[in-house]
Amino acid sequence: MTDNDRDGFGDIGGDDEETWFEEGSAGLVRSYVVTGGRTRSDNYGLDMMTLVVALCSPEEATHLPAEYARIVRLCQRPMSVAEVGGHIDLPLPLVKVLLSDLIEQNYVIFRKAAPLSETPNQHILQAVLDGIRKL
Image (cartoon, rainbow, N blue to C red; front, side, top):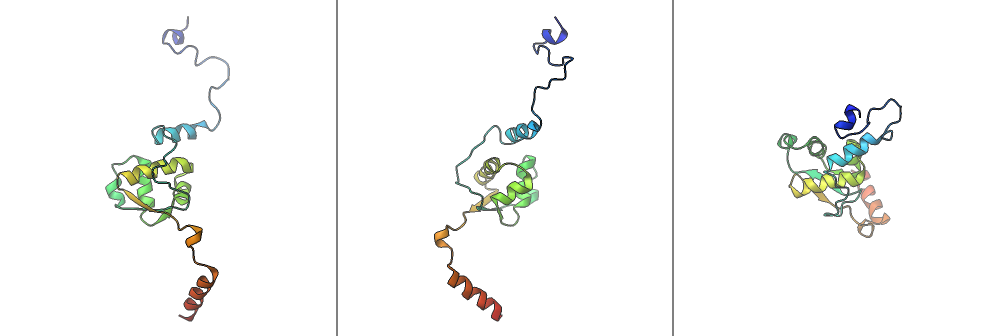
C-alpha cells in the first residue's frame, strides 16, 4: 500500500505519463465555477442582440466577483450580449447567466433589439439618409 492509497486518493501520481484531463479543459472548469455550476438562465430571454447597460459606476461594483465587476465596467455604455461575451471570453450561455444575475441585483438593465417587423423599411431609411446629407 502506498501513501496515496492510505490517504484515499489511490495512485494519482503514478510513473506513467497518462493524464486524467483533456487539453483545454481548464476553461470549461473555470466557466463552470464562475457561474456557480449554472449553465442556463432564461429569466429574461436575453439573446445575442439584447443591449445591456450598467446602472452603477465601476467603483460601486468593486465588491462583486471579478467577472461581474468586469461586465459592469464594460457596460458603462450600451453593449450587446454578444459584445460582452467577446470581451470577457466566455460562451454566450454563461454570459447570459452572469448578466441575469446582474439584472436581478439591479447592476445592469437590458433592452431587447427591435423585432424585424418593427424595423423601418428601406423607404424610411432612405428618407433619413437624404435628410442627413442635407445637413
